[in-house]
Amino acid sequence: MTVIVNNYPIRIFQGAKVGDLVLRYAVRNKLGIKTINNLIAMDRWGHTLDNEAPLTDKQIVKIINS
Image 1 (cartoon, helix red, strand yellow):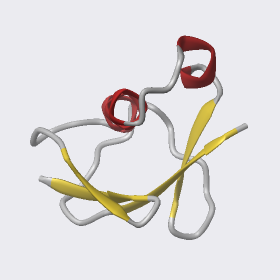
Image 2: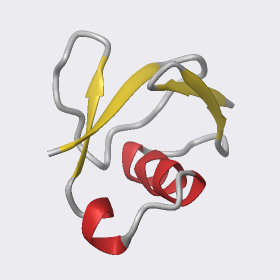
Image 3: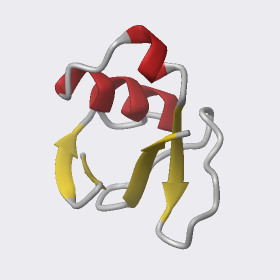
C-alpha cells in the first residue's frame, strides 16, 4: 500500500502500523537514532497518531521532529 508522508508517497506493507511507517520514513531519509526517537506522526488535521494505530491505503500523514 502507499501512504503519503510529507507530500511524498511511501510504499509500505499491507497491515502496517504508524510505528512501521515512522521507521520506514527514517530509514529512507537516513535519519540517526536520536532523531528517530523524536519523530511524531500526525494525521492531516494535526492530531497525533499512536504508533500502534493501523494505516490505510492513500492515508496522508505528516511526520515532524519534536
